Amino acid sequence: MPRYNLEYPKGDRNTVNRYKHQAVYSLTTIHTIINTSPVLHVSFQPSPSDPFPVILPMIGQMGSFSRPSASISDTLECYLHGYVSSRIMNLAREEEASSTAGLPVCIAAAKVDGLVLTLTPNSHNYNYRSAVLFGYATLVTSVEEKLWAMQLITNSVVPGRWPETRVPPNAGEMASTQIVRVRIDSGSAKVREGVPNDEKGDLADAGVTGRVWTGVVPLYEQFGAPVPGPYNEVAEVPEHVRSYVQEVNAASKEYAEVAARKDAPVKKAEAGDEEQ
Amino acid sequence: MPRYNLEYPKGDRNTVNRYKHQAVYSLTTIHTIINTSPVLHVSFQPSPSDPFPVILPMIGQMGSFSRPSASISDTLECYLHGYVSSRIMNLAREEEASSTAGLPVCIAAAKVDGLVLTLTPNSHNYNYRSAVLFGYATLVTSVEEKLWAMQLITNSVVPGRWPETRVPPNAGEMASTQIVRVRIDSGSAKVREGVPNDEKGDLADAGVTGRVWTGVVPLYEQFGAPVPGPYNEVAEVPEHVRSYVQEVNAASKEYAEVAARKDAPVKKAEAGDEEQ
Image (cartoon, rainbow over all chains, first blue to last red; front, side, top):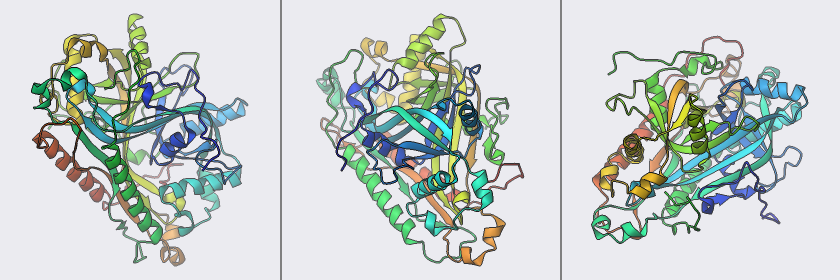
């Protein structure tokens, strides 16, 4: 357990202005959402003259190269591996060359944990967990840090995968792999869990409550049985894959099922902050 | 079936430059990914002086108010319902007042359909579907269009849900609900499905193939059994919920299981375009 439950300070950029009762600034919560999302959405401005920001789906993990023993609750960097475009890599390189802080990026992740079906369309909701981080992206140039980050990211796909494959990467693989490190400036999360909420007027209307089914439909990701590929020669699915599949399946289902039965979030009165 | 398989024209902004063999410009593919994603990530530039773009998780659907019978393969608008922040709404309103085309936004969705575990960390991959759209956002001000879009979005959560709830929305609900319409400028998608791919050198190394398990772990979303809420008075889970849960569960699992067994994508030789 960390000594302190650190939070990102609330600033203009990361403060949640709507449904404040669902806002979370805890590093542990935010980093956990990021680290358990198989895909992150990363946004940046391609050029000052382009009005459109770009969003790329990327794989990433929070970690600390300088303090590898740091926990999820500590201040960490976000390491990104781009499998979609090299534009972000080029931009990060240009930014670095001009000795600025790096390319400003926004990183987002969201999971839906259940459909919250209520009496009226307006009170419908999801149980969900979402996180957003703002930070400055630069290219990782040190070989040691790149290798460490490749290992971090491979082991995020399946824990313990790295040593079970052909490693270390050869010179060509090292040269063609690019890793971006994002120094985090601020972040926030929003979490909704629990049973439906409805307005008093509808709850008091027997014609409505007698006709409309209300409840939560839990939603969670599941792994199917591993499917050996055409050139696989290893008879047994290895333990690191089997145990991960079982653990994640159980934990994902458990989270959504528990969230579906919790008390609804308590709303604090705020102008324009009705839950929906 | 549509008469033509329309595609978004390739321009500077939406052309996929990496893993081109996985790029798709078909409206059907792109719109289907968007419409089957429970959450979209929407990015925009909060102000010209802010270096950071912002990403918001939002609920959205492609549709056409002027041609409600339009199919998923037609040119459509994207309707967004914001449950996170009203910043995008204010910005869209300001843009509209200044009679520009609207607020430039990027909309993204991504699904992971399986973990592709290969001989080396570099050749690891996901089976996945991702889509991105660029467009101009404006606020929906007409009552008819807003009501139509609210219905479109509610029925995207569970088809047929709208008429099974207390409708129409009352005056307060109509006033507090804001819908953004995005006129699409361009878009693209990337889809990877199939068994693992590895490099010839590793495939020829019996020390590697004899030790490393290769294959795909399918990944898909599943709904749990619907959980009635504390003030529910309807004994049976209604048919529109039950049948949707069954259909989506079967289709999601089927897609990932089939994708895990397809031939690996054929790579066209491209500089810097190795699959990984």
